[in-house]
Length: 215
Image 1: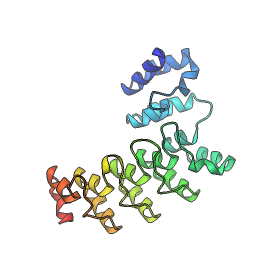
Image 2: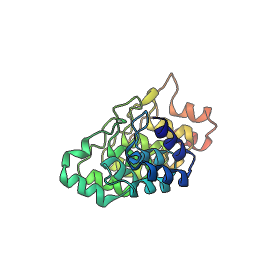
Image 3: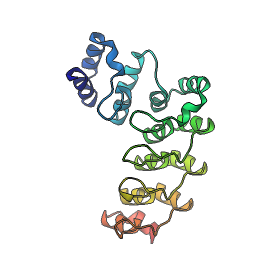
């Protein structure tokens, strides 16, 4: 357990040589999961360290669909779906679909492929986040992916963790492009969270540009 915690700490801190040493000493650690259920590969991607995700992936005998989609290894995703088409609807140990992870991390090609393979664009995460692929893309400011998801029928008014909507998130973070995109696809600017609309949240955060779009 202590060794596993050190492994994830090394990933978080970007300690490449230490990670390599740990894998050399205990090769099975590449399959370890942290308390939330994230594998080392996914944890590295969340931490903004894609180079470490690739390093771990090269030392792992087989990626699951969540890891493959997160890294953007389309050929691997394709093989897994051919073997089991239902896998596009499955959830990771953390409660996310492959599509949600690809959208959140910003892997547009993986998003495209998963949608073509029948992934549910409006699937809701089975964890407290209540995320959909769209809310993840919006949270990370991935405009092109958000556009693709909306074109495939993503719900722009989904309410997730805390009662937020994608429009509230985009407006409060000052993302003009995504705010405009959501409005164009039917996002409801009058939805309220604790009595506050997306406009109110934008003004609270000093986001004048997105606030202007919402007036």
